[in-house]
Length: 247
Length: 249
Image (cartoon, rainbow over all chains, first blue to last red; front, side, top):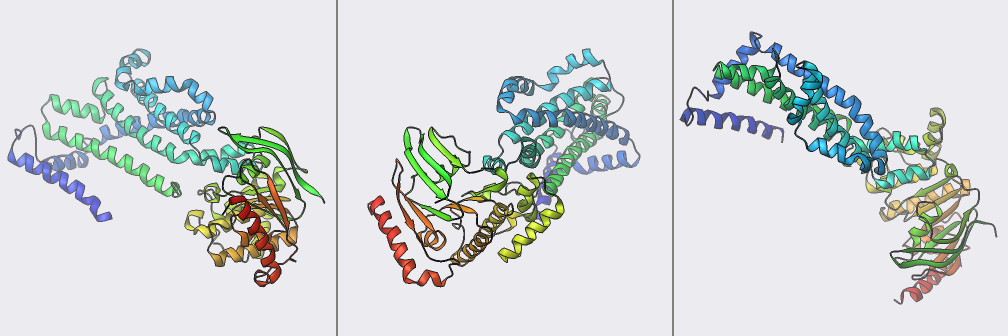
């Protein structure tokens, strides 16, 4: 089945090449895939984009780690009691449904035009996703396993450590994967609109303004590759550690 | 008669369906008692009430010196009670870990049990890699590793083919004869009931009553040979006759 995964990227490049070749869109605004890939290669080799890439990845990583450190324990705690979760469900769902971008101005006021406000808004939105998924993972644990442990005389702490925590992991991982994707989206968007000198978002806006169209496409492509690889990384880790999931 | 489990005037209903109205039973110590009865007669419900999973609506019940560490219950859906993130060994070890036993003692107990079962598991693999029958054996070992004084089993052999069914009956007997626990088991299979149990309790339709308790004096260990002798068939016929009356078949 492995070989079929390569069909997707080949198909994408093919369609792109055909559309570019047919010149439905002015060549200036839509360069072909090979021009773009060559440009990206150049930017990577001469280091022109590595600074932006590392700034963005650094912010994503930091916001994700903050979201994880706060969100995971909170989700586990809230999931333990349906009563507690239901009591705060509205707050979580409300902010989860509010577009994170709508909160930028608020975060800017609080944290100023700094990296901190970018990281804070991404961390905030990712954290809610982690809380939500982790709590549901705990709440939807199979009753039969908990009952079995209760009958064996397990304490609440033992049941939590040996059963509920593990039961919640598959759902938690779904949350982590969505959280890291969302983090990337928010960081890139904030880089576009909140003053900064480096970052993938900044690079895209800058090359658009200066009509360096191939650079813009190359950077967009890079952003896509980064997002895809982050997702893949989580899938690989998930497969390795949650080999038992769904069984 | 030394009753270790006693139930008096138990009441329980689900959504206006009365399962137990005025139900009483007592189970003798150190014996295998099989419960045999029509569908919906509350066999599993009784075990669930006795083990504290389901609340009763009224009446009294008591298990002598009840202690979670000396009690085991093998569920009907044993597959869902195994932990897929733990290896086979860690699954069997779970109840001992709960009792805070040290590693050495756990290993020793599991090895002891393995000898009794004459079954070689790949201890480092996971339950989902085992067949349904092997998972059943794993659930059995997990229940027996604590040397329980009281053991509940719901449909113990349902997942097994006949060969492994007979084999596991043999292991259970061996365990029973070594440690003499009180075993209360539900079965839908008359042969199983008569093969293993000293007392066979036949339940009526709802609201459930104990219709008859049939003594089964066949001596242990009961081998395959025991399945062929006249006395076995006499007991089996009695159970069947009572069951026939209950179900109007």
